[in-house]
Every structure is written in structure tokens, then in C-alpha cells.
Length: 397
Image 1 (cartoon, rainbow, N blue to C red):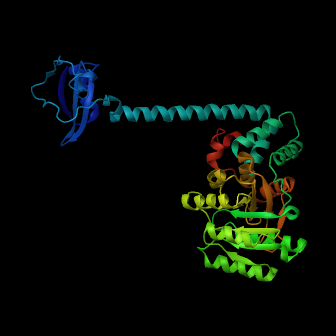
Image 2: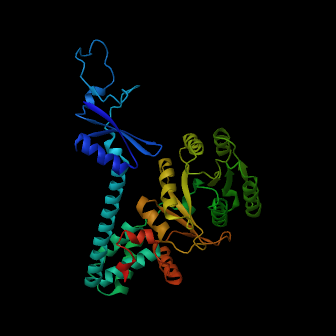
Image 3: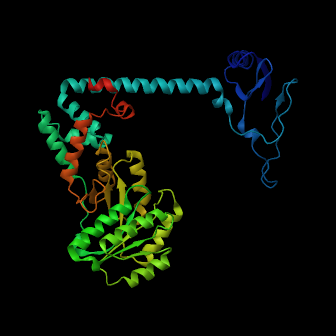
């Protein structure tokens, strides 16, 4: 093998000199910036096996490879490099990036042509897809719903059927909460409305079965304001509220409240990435396996965050979820898509701060119709990144 050092004003010139001197099969061993340009060390008749780490004496071959060294080139020192770094040469890296960019551009153009062709052949489907994206429906779900209505030519008829199909995919919580009772814990991040929702549920239970059948527990020892808010609700409703600082206290409290038909637990706001808090709730469930966990989700949360949140809490064997703040959002397609994607049963919907009025049992048709009305009133434009996956805005022209 022959190794030689080349210096030039830039990489392209240096590589040209390498090819002229060592030929097209030369291998770049190093590429270093120096005063006045770059320095490249290249080799011909390169054999990577000659640069392997030394083997144990018992396995070492006695034959030493012969290497021809250019007189002006120092012999490599330190651990020998095993990999061929030609592929990391900056010019080739830049060329790969440009090829990848051209490939993406070509794919987008082909997609654009395909959807323009579809727009000519099936304008109803294009308009139906556009409405779903405007409503905030996730791309794959919107595509599926559009394909299911492919046989319908009238847009409004196709839209009504599509909304019905969407509502039919929302799973429902099968527990008859207001009659069955039991222990229910609300989970979720801070700010989604868990405490207010607990108060609404407690009020509904007290109105139907009496205040003596209801008790509240808070495990939120981080927010003093949260405890005071729950105590205020409890005084108004005439129900007891207890504080459980750890799972031992919770187990004791649950034993003391065993005569209560409805026990509602307000938990601390859990960040989906907070391992300690989720581990604490797992311990809590070990002490009281009959606790039903409901994840509280705000309709104002972005789609990606909703999916991350549901995935993070799914290992807690969620019974279902409660959707809050539907009165504060500009679109409901995201939350609906998340429920469908994760098949998370919907138990209740909260659409305001009033206790207990702004709480209703989950009704998929009502939620989907509300999503459609919000879309029509706001005329929300689909996110450009979402639309790009369908060939760009031109596909909707």
C-alpha cells in the first residue's frame, strides 16, 4: 500500500490531484484544514485488514504486511483507523444531501400531479379530505374516511356520512358511573382542569344519591391553591375532603371511607415524562387495585402533545378519559383523532367552568357535530406541513 499527502487550495482541487497521482481507486484516509487550504492523506492498494487492532499473541499471525510509505509522509501513529472515511468526505456528503433533496422534490411533484389528477376525476373526495383537514382530523384518519365515502358524488351527503363514520370510531366508557359508584382517580398534567372536573362529578353524585355517599381525596401536595380549591368545593357540596401525602396514607384513607359510595381522587399534575409520579401512581394502584384511573385531556392541547400524553400514561391501564375545555378550543378534530388512534374510551366532556352544569356524558355524535361547527365557523386552514404530505396546497385548487 502506498500513502501520500496532498495539499491544495480547496477539497475539489486536492481530490483532483489524488486521482491524477494515485488513480480513481485511491482511498482518502484523512481530510484536514491547514493554512492556505486543505491537506488530504490518501492511499492506493488500501487494505483495511492491515489496520485492525492487534490480536492476542495466541491468535496473532506471524506475517507482517508490507507497506510502502511515501518518503514525505509520516507513518500513522496511535490506534489505527479501521473504517474507510472516503464516504465522509465533505464533497460526497454534500452531494448525497443534494440528491436526497432532489428525490424529495420529485416525490412531491409526483404527489402533486397524482392529487391534481384525482381532483379532476373525484372532486368530491378532494373537498371531503379538505374539510377533514380543516377540522383538524389526523391525516391518515382523514384519508381513510375520505376513501370510505368514495362512492358518493354529493359533497354534503358524503360529509354527513363521513362524520357518522368518525363518530362511530370513538370508543365509549362502558361504566355507568352515576349508578355504580366506586373509586375513581383523575390523572393528567397540570392545567387541564382536573380539580374542577372532580367537583362537577362530586356534585352530580351528591345531587343523585346525597352528600353522605360522596367523599373527595387529594394527593396533590404540590399546589396549596389546588387543595384550597377542592376544599371550597367540598364545603359547598357538604362532602368530606382528605389529603393523602403518600400511598400508605391513601390506603388508610380509603379504608376509613369504605362506607362512601363514591370516592373521587384528585391527583397531582403529572408530566408525561415524570417517571417518579407515574411510579407513585402504580404503587397507589397496588394498594387499591380497584381504583379506576381516568386520564383528563384538554381539547386545547396540540395533536402531537395529545398523542404523547396518551402513550405515556397508557401503561397505567387507563379506564378511559375525560375531555375538558371544549368551549375554549378552535377545533376538536385533534382530540377526536387521538381518541380514535389510541382507542381510549371517552367518559365525559366538560365545556365550561360552571359546577355541575358544564359536564355531560360522552356522546360521540354531539362531539363530532361540534367539531364540524367549529370548523365551519373558524374556516381553519390546514397546517402547511400536514398538507405537504398530500402534494401541497395546489392539490386543493
